[in-house]
Length: 271
Image (cartoon, rainbow, N blue to C red; front, side, top):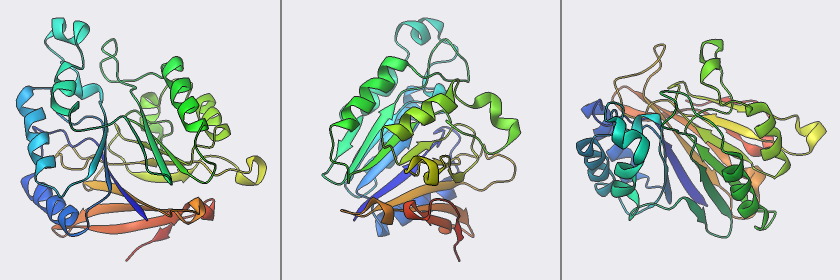
C-alpha cells in the first residue's frame, strides 16, 4: 500500500498554530510515503514563509515530497522578480527536497505547473507541458495508479468558483481520462470535494477530481474547516485505491468522507 497525503494552500504566513500542531501529530503517527504540496505554499512568496514551510517539512518523518507552486508562490509586489524569476524562491526552498514526478512501480504522480506571473489569481494549462506529462505516464504499466497534481482546479463544486476553473478544463479532463489518469489533485479555491467527472459506463474509465481545502491557513472559505486529502493506493489493483478527506475538527484531523476508485461515483460519510 502506498499512502499519499495532499496538503494544499497552507499559505505559510497565515498558518494557524493549533492546526499546524495537529497536522504534525497526525502525520507523525500515520506518516505518508508521499507528501504532495499542491501550491499556495506561502502567502506572499516571502523567503521567511518558504523557510517556515521547509521547517514544517523537516519536523515530519521521512517521506518523498512532490510539490508544485501556486499563484501565491510568485512575488506579488516585486515586479522585477515576478516577471524575470517568478519561481526563484520556490526553487531555492524545494529543489533539493522535492521531485516533480514520482513512480514506485504501482503509483505514478506527476505535476503540472498552472501558475503564471501574467495572471494575478487564475492559472492556465500549458499544452506542451500537459503533453509531456501524459507522454511520461503513457510509458508506465496499465495497472499503475496515475495521479496528476495541479494548483488550479480542473473542476469546481460551486458556481461562485467557476471563474477560478482552468480555461479549457473540460477538454483537458477528456484528454486526461483518455490517457488513463485516475485522480487529479487540486486546490486554490479552499473548498474540498471529490467527484467522478467521467461516465465510466461510456468511457470505461473513472477519473476523479479531488480538491483540497486549505491545510493550515486562517483563510478558510464558506465556513469550511481546514482540511487535507489522503490516498491509499493498492499495489496491484487501482480500483481498490481509497480517497479520503480529513478535516480539522475538535482539535485534530479526522476522516469525514471516503470513496474508492472502483465505486465509480458516490461517497461514504465517515464517522
